[in-house]
Length: 74
Image (cartoon, rainbow, N blue to C red; front, side, top):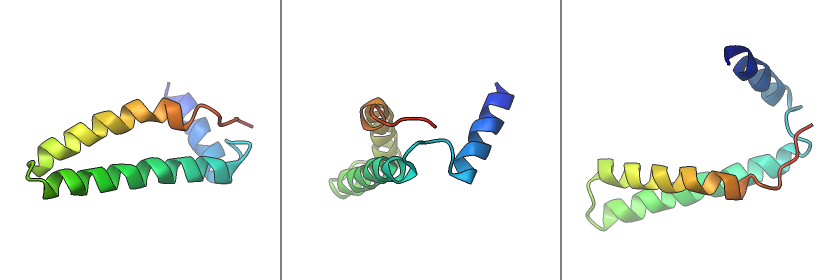
């Protein structure tokens, strides 16, 4: 398992993990920005920060397969 992580990380850092690295970055940015906005909104609505982070983390984790479904690996 550790070897798989290391080899994937090396390929990612070299820019060779995804066929279209900019598409992967765009999808990651969409997920990150959406999560950040959701945490801020929930905190502004009065939810404790810890609860907001946990709720948004679950939602962000559930959105990952949808965001990355069309990415092609090199």
